[in-house]
Amino acid sequence: MNRHTRQLQYFFFGQDFADGLRTTLAVLLPGLGLGWLGELEAGIDLSLGALCISLVDGPGPVTHKRNGMLAAVALLPVVALLTGLAQPYFWLLGLEIGTLSFLFTLFLVYGARAGSVGTAGLLLLILMMDRPLPLPQLLRFAGLVTAGGMWYGAVSLLTRRLRPYRAAQQALGECSRAVAGFLRLKAEFYRTGTNLENDYRRLVSQQVTVSEKQDAVRELLFRTRQNMTESTGIGRRLVLSFVDLMDLYEHITITYYDYAAIHARFEASGVLDAVADLVEQLATELESIGFAIQANHGYAARLPFAASLEQLKARIDALDDPARPGHTLVLKKILVNLRNLSQRLQDILAYFDARAAPAHRELELGRFVAHQSFALEELRGHLTLNSGIFRHAVRMTVACLVGFVVAQVLLPSHHSYWILMTITYMLKPAFSLTKQRNIHRVLGTLAGGVLGGVVLWLVQDQLVLVGLLFGCMVMSFSFTRSNYIVAVTFMTPFVLILFHFLGLSYLQVVEERVFDTVLGCLIAAATSYLLFPRWESDQLQDYMRAVLRANLRYLQTLAETLAGSLVAEHDYKLARKEVYVSSANLAAAFQGMMSEPRA
Image (cartoon, rainbow, N blue to C red; front, side):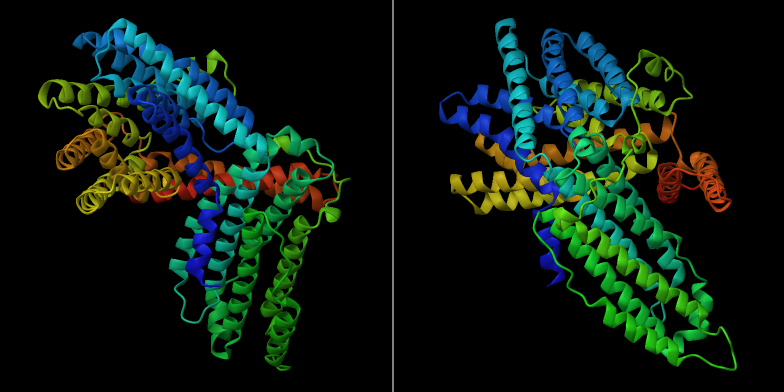
């Protein structure tokens, strides 16, 4: 199958597209439905509430989704009433923005989902800045926004209820693809003329991706009681397949050779390219297995690895030299590892056979996920400049206040809230991520502005524009987590089309959006750089210590096993997990450090 076609299939069967489609429908339907009934303003308010709650609906176990969305639904009317009452008074509104931006950013102490609850509250505050409402209308608005949030929560939980395993299947499929990508990069180490330095660099980057995908699967599988308690069925097979996949990944990562020496000895024989081809085949098979899990359809092994392994064995045997005993020993070790990889792929294929899942296998997997404490002491412990989250909250407060003053006093316009919205989404705890997001936001806004302007210039049919609005929303929501520049590129056209329906000139909207976006990005970048900056280079030693500690624990566990001590399988795998996580954190920090300004 054409690789580009397969990539499209991955996308349309993936979790990001499913979430993007659901979010678009849940946000758009109230506005369209009430607009058709002549209550467009009420429909927009409902859609606004749904949009705010959608920020909390990230991947994860259904109980976390439900609790996060309930917290956000409870927060929205409070923010709406406070903002509506403070809106006529400049200083009071500024005080509210400063206080709530600081407080809501501190929600990150309790994890990413709690942080998204705060972001939902900030989004509503910002969108109400330029909307004066008398008290009766304010109460109605608060009720509609709350109802919109409840509508979105109901849609999200209902879809999860109807398809309880779908998110886990998609996450496991994507994790399989990430591991296959890691294996494909390992194949490059055997290619004739390969650049080993570049290979190692790409391998480290892919390791970060694999770690992120692993965490996503763990959160979905190991925090869901139904998966953990089933003795048979889909949930059990998902859990066991993930365990087998992690065993496969361990086998790939622990396999290391002196590749420079191997190339010096065997590159001329051509056998290394044969090894690379076989590793590529294994990666392709794993990728296909991952897609079958992700798409929720059956799969049978397609590639005859036994024949390929025998052919490779014959080529290695042909290189034996009686005058040099052990000359091909390293190649034979590689062959043994490839046989083991092939067998482990067969183990993963048991996912597609319900009868093959060993119901008696004891699982104690709740220990593999972190448990978040919501005690007040957690928050108190971060009220110091030594806390990265506290420093980030201070930066957010200052940036939002600067943006508010600029928007309200220096550059008042109809959509001045875009400046604050940009600041809220662009300012991240680490400078490297803030810098990356800013670049993507500006480039995406420019590209999207051109795209949206061309669409509105060429297309006059209202139904076609509604279809394009829907398509742009789906694509924007689908790429928000995976490719931010693409998400922003599609976000800008749907904003322009939306304002076109509201009777505004798209040229004026494009001009304001681009200007406000660039200004907001500049404020966010300057604040991140000048005010208590968090440099990844300063954190690197901590990450290295964590890697050393994790590896020491792992080696101690192995030593105890080899010494004959009884070590539980879960203790070994927990030690292994810590090695993977700490190594990925170090790799991510190093990548971030490379984008920081030089001293």
